[in-house]
Length: 284
Image 1 (cartoon, one colour):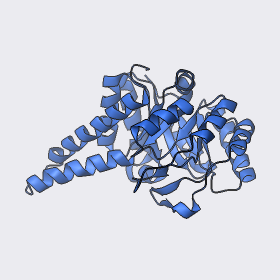
Image 2: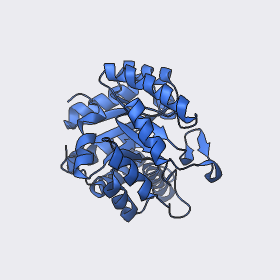
Image 3: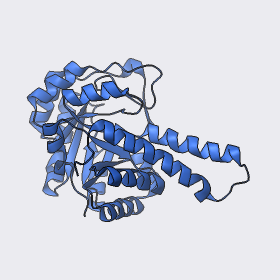
Image 4: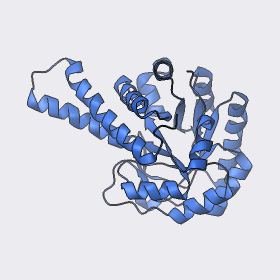
């Protein structure tokens, strides 16, 4: 099965009150773990690829791995640029074979964010590629982007509704109290913002910073209208902890397969748990 746009499953997710997971791909083992978990759960999913991960893996390898996963699994899989910083980066990914892109103009003023996002939507739609936009500022650290708590800002529902109406994005990430990375305390999610926005627009809201959010908060977010949830840090932590355990038990290990196999299995367990929590099992 070829890679698909997020429109193959996000409308169904919103209509049926489940969420599709975006699990970031950082190397082959991440891709294998995510795909194997989704195959067992019969779930659609999204490979998220940040610009930092793209730089690390290379465009050709990234697309080839995703295409191989789609072919092997037979699942609806979107290959999605995560937090794309410019029109040029988005177009480069689309030309290379990405089936979905995010343009993150949240650091611009509302007018400029709308104008720039509209350009990406217009070009992507002509290629059958889905687009995610973002409004408000999500705190935490992702790749080289760091936003402290003081400068994180919640999205305003009326601005989010206007943003959708003027851009026509296929899903909308809004800042509602989550953050990238792991939490020091429990996040305070503003479900009222999610509800107001999703009641007014036909596309789902995206929850960034899904790692470490309590299960009940995830369920309430989905009930309020979240249809896409991003997870990366929990997989990174699971991967690293598994590798540390192997090397701590036997410091003479030098074959990468000896520690990457447990790492892959640990990530697979995380992804499988998230898919079940999100309610996307058997929705492929």
